[in-house]
Length: 79
Image (cartoon, rainbow, N blue to C red; front, side):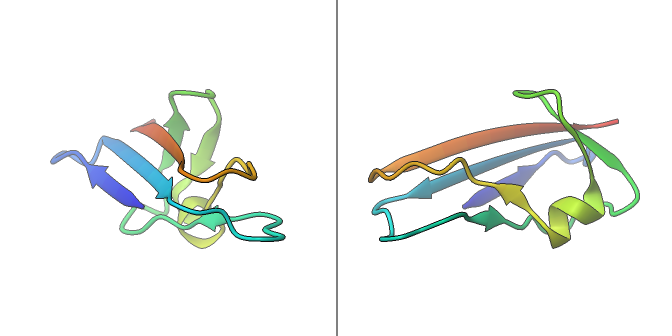
């Protein structure tokens, strides 16, 4: 996974890519790093709002699909 943060830290883009799926994979969370734990981050794709500490400690739930070459992109703005 890759994470890009703007210079002013007002926008975050996260990209996840997996070549091969795992057998019996139930769920996968992607924990982000270096966010402000006291700020709120709005996902532009879904409109969901997450506290920074939740994104860093719990993470993003990767949409599960039993297929190879899975990718997903999230774009967040700081509220």
